[in-house]
Length: 439
Image (cartoon, rainbow, N blue to C red):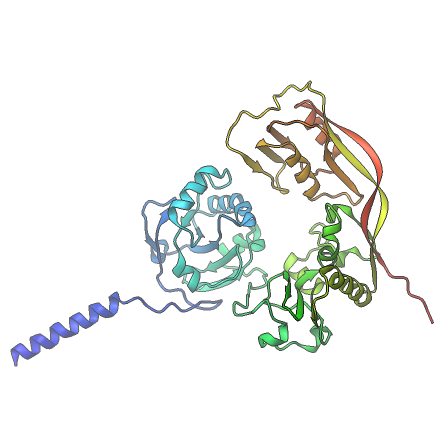
């Protein structure tokens, strides 16, 4: 009997150890769920290679999922660093990625926005990605002191006021980032099992209002006998951009809006109290067309143009209008050396920050970035590189708005560059309200 009792006790102990060693099934978590005492592995910027959530007991946690190829993710790093420093007594921020630790360490060494930050990097985090599934990054999970998921958001909500409210156990307004990961983007909405509300439908077959949970994306899919064009949760201007972008060098810089109510077409944070998420709910659309045969892409776009003009009661078209060309030329008499010192090629361009620089780049890249930058100006203007400089250059700029030509000219003069102005006719996209004719 004693031998039998000892054998049973030994068997129970072995079974218990085996159960603890077996990997637990990962259950996706959402708002309101309690987070288990998860283990963070392959850490960077921490005293140890691993840590557990319980090691940060008494602190709030934000998991910021990111990737090295995600520009908005990298752009957020200075803000995350500032917030971690200001709220270090109450908050810990983890920058979480599924990418390998060696890759992230190499990235941090080269990227200025990732160097010397105070938050912790979590790498090889495939388990965390499964626990908090998402289809796009940045993706932020807010966890309370009692390990409950309080919010799942886009990075737009990573602000001082929201984090301060979070630290003070106060609610802040947000729209939950809810992505339908099972959605097949190559099939129409009604073939994905999504039941549309009557208020969402503009056309039974081709036109819908904003559909929550779907990414803002587009695609044209063709077979030997049919085609399918899909535009999901796109602003009106972006729909027109798809039609005309191939015919214009820079669609948004070559667009004239002759509209009574611009707020439905362009989101401007300075003109509204709404977040871009809220604005998108009312001002983005899904346009889908299926058909038999293989018409040309231009023919499909022409049908789309007719539909957009009809459904929105607009007149979108190409016209020749006068615009200003700012030609960058070289005088050779600058106080700073223009020719590159030969350092590793790098570009730092953030519309939110005044300081911008181009290291070991062709000068034409400066004109490209100036043409693509956001500006408060609403007139049509373009930059062109007329220097014919064959070598790479190093340039630093301190400009908030590329439309401030006087400041830009002052910055360029240091390198022996100047700006010549030319007025010329250019093909542009014009969007205007359609004149209603009473019958």
